[in-house]
Length: 299
Image (spheres, rainbow, N blue to C red):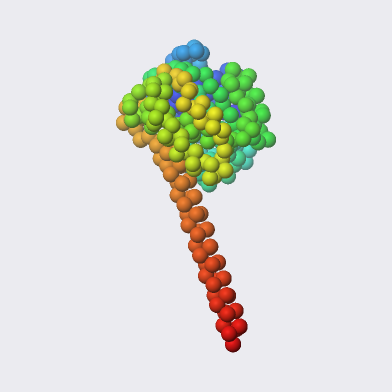
């Protein structure tokens, strides 16, 4: 398979570099990053060091048949990124959304006429400078189940990545969302490393309790132990993406993390109100029927 990494930031650059070991890979990124990669290679520090000679460009000119596109832009940039390739996708093109937030795959499906899959990762990568990234934590990559997913996962594994086909992608996405709801806002508010968030147990538990109320009503059930485990996670020493965005004066992904919880809550309230309205109408109808029966009996 051919692979295009649409959004070669920290995560995208890492997966692109690793896939380039055995696959045909094209990175799409910012001009400065692209120039650095093409001139000196993509440098990786941390647990997996090396310099990777992978082709990088600023925009997609063509998408060949049998191509997988990993969408790894910031979720707020997804719309424009997908529009840039909308007229280039083939019938067999597969777009894999590997981003924070919930529901991004629905947006992508509304824009393109090809298969769109969701994926989640807990990989921790730091974008050190143009042409250089650092691995802070080696995590997993889970891809939504489809006919092609096993082949994609096999490619990832052969290139040294910890990948698997998800048994329940919605559950996996929400579990990642739980972590993001806690990690990103708290590290951004307090200006701390991910590893320091564990010191704010009260806030962590408060956020998780609120999210749990929404998920329980949506039928997305996690065990009590799973919520408790999140409060015990020993996060890596790196900075969360949200804190990095704030420090770099960039727009954050807060709307796609916490707003999802808020919107789900609103949806539940709307459903509840509609149910009440139906019950009121039903009761009024019964009252009218009883009144009518009494009138007939009285005559």
